[in-house]
Every structure is written in C-alpha cells, then in structure tokens.
Image (cartoon, rainbow, N blue to C red):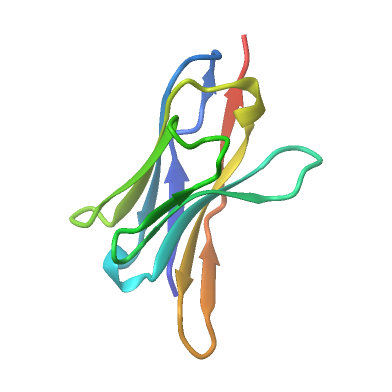
Length: 118
C-alpha cells in the first residue's frame, strides 16, 4: 500500500506560480511512474505531467514550457512547479502512482485545489 499526500494548492492570480508537492509513503524509485492529473468542474480528469523511475518526463501540450515535474528521492516527494498560471489551469490536482506488475497497481492522493483567478 502506498499513501500519497498532496500539498501546495492555493488561490493565485493569472501569471502567478505555485509549486505542488506529493509525498509518498515509500521510495519513489520503487514506483514505475508518478504523475500529476487534474480535474476541473464538469470535465474529465486529465494527465498533466509524469515522470518514470528512469527519469523520463511527459507533459500535457497545453502546460509544456510552463509546468515542470521533478522529484527528490531523499524526501520521497514529487513536485509540480507551475509558472505563468492561467484561469484554465484551475482544477483539483491529484498525485498518481503506477506500479507495474501482474496486475498493475495504482494509487491516488486526495487532491489539492488550485484556483487561478483575480
């Protein structure tokens, strides 16, 4: 069982920045993929950014160049640095862990609210 705890969500003005954190209860290098998803009201949950155990990253095209996913193995924490935030980035952001195997196992955090507004 892996627990994921997100933090860092807040109300921020357009153009501002936030850094989200996701603390895992186990070594993040034992997790095959760690991702940030988001879900806005009335919309489906979407993958925002991800990093594999090997360090490969991927981004939603609309956030590439503005968001950066990174990790700190000593703290078992994954971060999402979000710059130049836009109102359309408003959503609940969720941390997700994927452990590949037979079967694959997924874990989700409870989410943290990001609101971009004046």
